[in-house]
Image (cartoon, rainbow, N blue to C red; front, side, top):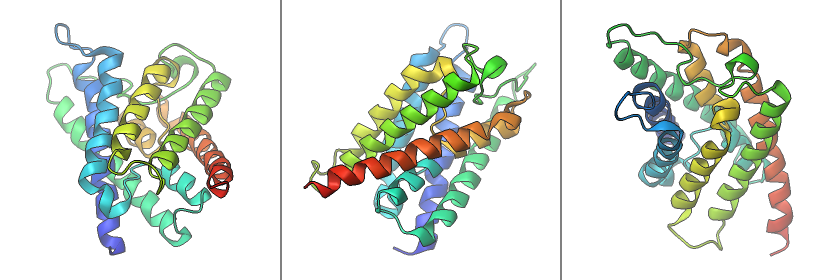
Length: 230
């Protein structure tokens, strides 16, 4: 598969993740009568990854997340030369998804962007959690996300079921950490939402690059131990 096709798949996968996941929070979570709540948002993020993993995962590997790319690279399952192009495609795809979401949401009378499903700590955390709490949550949960991905996509894992495990894993992660950080585990998703938020989210986005990537790199290193014991 050519690099251009891989990058296109990563663009559309991350576009869908942001539009579907953040869109569920911005457009549906707080709707007076049909609000889907935290649980609905958690499932929306999981479903975006599950559906696009089946749709284009066979083209690009279905990363849709810079932390995933770093984690796979750390585990020796992704080429260094494709790392930065993948991340660029993911960030652009996520930002485009956020732009489309903003254009839809701004069509409502009295619209205010507010947090726009962005991530944060302190006053920008849904539960007002501290920076330390947010860093711990993002590192540990991204570690577990990559551990699930690396295990589910291993050559000895049951074929065809990886997207289900990965999608449900992301759902569980959101159920745990939406109150803490509004759940990132994905720098592209965090950057995309922060670009359109009316808060100081953009000034905090560094946390949602550093912590998820650290957790992902650690997961790749740890997974090598399990892979080497086959």
